[in-house]
Length: 304
Image (cartoon, rainbow, N blue to C red; front, side, top):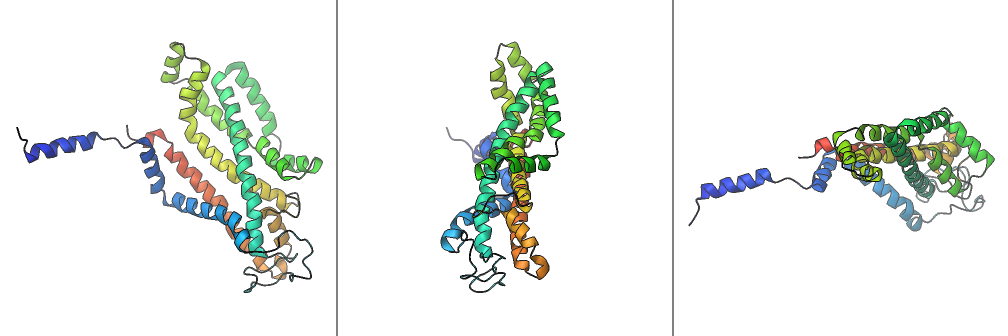
């Protein structure tokens, strides 16, 4: 028995109408629709790759502190030094990517530590509530009352400026605000019907946290994690600008900006503006990516 072409078209149309796009493709399409976020990913990826590859391809001396005899100081951009040299004779272009290795690596690692501690602390406080939440939040209020940049300056001055210590001190003290955001999500989700139903059916607290609270908080967690990376890069640069950044012969973008700021009054613009351009674009790109990821994991934007 044959079917008419009209019937076949109706069946195929019904099938297409009932077809639901997989979640990963929906999320991918939501991200692609944000053109600024896509451009930010491309730029940030290119910047990370360049920070690790350019020093291997564009050979410059970035570790010898005594370059007076081999490289002129404060030389304007030329064919030999594309972005000129700084007050120590370092090639500015090579130093931007050399310092970027440390700034981006420290920022990503410190941001990763920050979101882990902030998520755990916020989840515990928000989900358990009661006396646990009260005690943890009062501790957090006391910590948040301390001016953060002064705390970093004090810790770095009292102890050390090693790379590992800078990662740990920024990561272990930068999660306080994140914990408040995650706590709010946990408090809301534990009171919703599906969490209450799981509890009534005998589900353990860990099951509810991992099955309901964490998945439904992932939007804010990913967003906060992205912003934490940008904050870590900014705080590291702030320490470097104050002369408390990574110790020589390593460098970071904040230290470079501090050195360039002391020379810009002499007309050596190439020691500040190219680096400032890359620095601002990196931080802005990370923030755009965070905004897009918040939409990607927003359940209300997905098909049912």
